[in-house]
Length: 261
View 1 (spheres, rainbow, N blue to C red):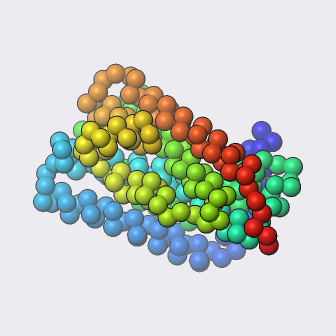
View 2 (view 1 turned 135 degrees about the vertical axis):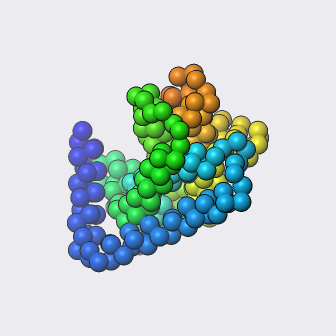
């Protein structure tokens, strides 16, 4: 409870700082909305030429894309501190964090809260609502719970990837760009159900980096392509990915050597 209170205090500080420049905040959030709008246009133009993609219709792909985008946006909003962690290591600011009597992860998380990502989230919600209106999904309590589990699991998986990205900075002093393949790249190829990329990709995203657990399998349940309630809880099972990410972070902290100030 004390840790949560501290994190919320950090968040409130970040929000108050951003609200000092309201015009800048609104323009940035609007820019985020417009940039991600191109994602919707790309899907729209493709389906003007093809009626289905591996059996998935336009509305079904929109549902898939919007949920993935919302998961990524939530993670980027809350875990932005990890994404910019390399600057903290290079400047030596992480030294100050280590001498404070508080959890270092909470302090890094609270160092950056990107509220402007709400522009992407609004875009995702608009796409999701449009997808619902165009689809034939019969929503019930179990499917609504599945959707909530997808958002929780997806936010945790992407946050864990940002945590791994930050932990690499202990050894390189700078973030490695190849990690963008697993964050921004996942957001891009996650626009479509992962099953369309073949069995090898499906296996990789099931047992290595569990994108399929937060996107493909629960989507099949929502679309009535799978009836087992087991698929409903798979997004929560994806939370296991946070464990190796935390262990790698702890390993990096133990081997951290100050870069000076």
